[in-house]
Length: 358
Image (cartoon, rainbow, N blue to C red; front, side, top):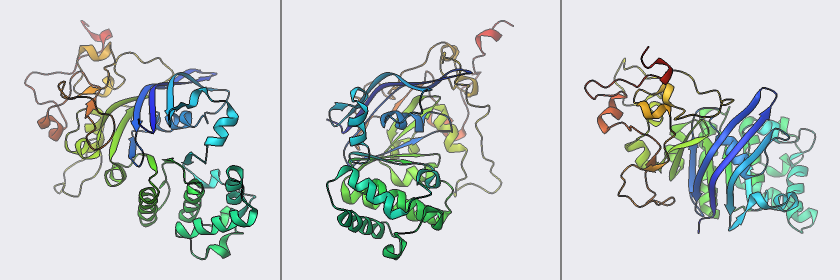
């Protein structure tokens, strides 16, 4: 049994401007000790999926309208709030995007970390303080004894992120969710933070969900990747397979939108045309269709399910043998992946229904 199984998760935000269709039936699994990357543009549902998993959606707007979140054999969506508070930090921990807004500015690092430890373990204040010192040293904060009584604003961005990692790992959780853990950090500090996360997860056998825009980060940090778009998982594969053989047009667009070290001089980037859909409108058909060069008539009417790229493959959702799956009616061929455009003679992207016959 997987450590985490999310099935058909649906999240809506009810606002004054209408309902936002934020997550539209997301499903995935995660084993113990496995690292899964979630990638996609801003607003595609990566963070909301994991906030829903933690039951931390902003209220009263956020609602989980369907699905199951099975963690360690228990559906988190059926637990009452007190049981969820016991799980958060102890079994499931999250590193939020901005440590400056996640840490309390009027409490010292020692006060915040000691409180976290004592909330879940029956230990004395001195024992919790000793554990805090151990954790700060483990994440590479120099002279941890001298930094205990510092406030968050007295740390650099990289050091604040290390404090957040230390707090997340304080109780040795089974699942760690890292939401853009290197946002606003310079390249050197990014590398240090990512190496630290990878090492600590390996040492403790912690499963990790890494949320990021940076495909270079997931290439080096994860075993598997889920690509999300408009609240759907549109492609899922092992990291090696996804980079070697992307099969969804959106994934192809993402890979061609980033600079490559092996690019020829003057070779242009190929951006994804258009803009993401307005999620205040209920999804109809494939949400990527308006931006897709491979769209066919069926794309405007029906959202494809996430299916193996080879129908003969048995579906394996976790581990190094995970099945490569894509949600696409007309996936690009290997040659088209390289060219980043359709190469079939006479093929033209299907026009929207309203334009047919005009």
